[in-house]
Length: 281
Ligand code: HXC
Ligand code: NAP
Image (tube, rainbow, N blue to C red):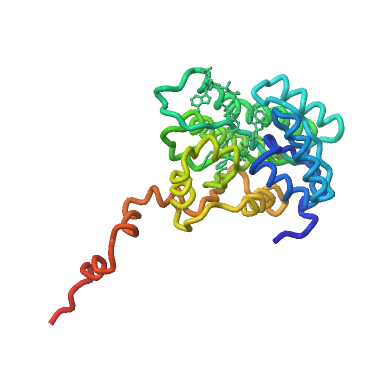
C-alpha cells in the first residue's frame, strides 16, 4: 500500500522491538527502507530478531540491550546510537502488564508496570527529544498505548494509569515541540495476539475467545495492519498529524461504550417487528 522507499534511510528506534508488535513494526519499517535499532532487556532475543529481520528484508538492524526503567541506561543507549548516526524517529512500544485484582497489588507490582510504560517512555522521549531540538532535526515519536488509556480498565490498573500518562505526554509535547519540528502521536490497538500479551492477560482459552471477538468485526487485528498504520504516522505524508491518537481496534471500545449497543445481541427479528409503528386506518 506504500511506495517502497517511504521510510528510506530513516533511522528508527523501536523499544521492545525484539518481540511481538515491536518486531512486526520493525520488519515493515525495514521493508520500507528504514534503518532499525531495537532495544529490550534480553540480549539473546534481540540478536535472534535482528538476524531474522535482516535476513528477511536485507535491511540494517542494530541491537541495544537496555532496561528502559533505568534513566542512566536509556541516556547511555541514546548517546551510543547518536554516536553512529542520529535517530529520525522513536517508537515507544516496550511495555509490562499482567492482570490482577488491584487490592492484591504490592508496591513493587505497581512499580514494575508503571516504571516500564510511563517512566521508560518518558526517559526515551526526553533523551531523543532534547537532541533533536538542539540539532533542529525534524523527527517523530510514536507511542503504542491502548484504548483503556481513556476508558480505564479493571484488573490492569497500573497499565491503564501508565498508558494514560503516555497519552498525556504525547499531547503535551506535541504542542511544546511541534513548532520545532518534532511530532508526537500515539496508536491505541485493540487485541493483536502476541505471546507476550496473551500469556499475561489471557489465562484460559475461553477467555481468549471472548477477548478476541468482542468487537463489531468479530476478529483480532493483524500485525500488518498495525505496522502499516505506524509506517504512515512516521512518514512525511502524516506531517500535519500531531498530538493525535489513532485507534485500531475494529470498533471494540465504542461497542463497549454506546448505551444501546447491547440490543444487537439481545433483540430478535420479532422484537424489532413489534416495535414498528402500526399502519393507521
Ligand atoms: C500480581 C505480579 C504479577 C502478577 C508480577 N507481579 N507478576 N503481581 N500478579 N501476575 C509482581 C511480583 O510479585 C513483584 O512484586 C513485582 O510484580 C515485580 O515482579 P518481577 O517478576 O520481579 O518483575 P520484572 O521481572 O521486572 O517483570 C516485569 C513484569 C513482567 C511486568 C512483571 O510481566 C514483564 O517482564 N513483562 C514484559 C512484557 C509484557 O508484560 N508484555 C505484555 C504487554 S501487553 P513483589 O512485591 O512480590 O516483589 C499489553 C497489552 C495492553 O500491555 C492492552 C491489551 C488490549
Ligand atoms: P510483548 O511482545 O511482550 O512486548 C513487550 C516488549 O517490551 C518486549 O520485547 C520486552 O522485551 C520489552 N520490554 C519490557 N520491559 C522492558 C524494559 N524494562 N526495558 C526494555 N524493554 C522492555 O507484547 P506486545 O503485545 O508486542 O506489546 C507491544 C506494545 O503494544 C505494548 O506497548 C503493549 O502495551 C501494546 N499493546 C498490545 C496489544 C496486544 O493486543 N498485543 C494491545 C494494545 C496495546 P524484554 O522482555 O526482553 O525486555
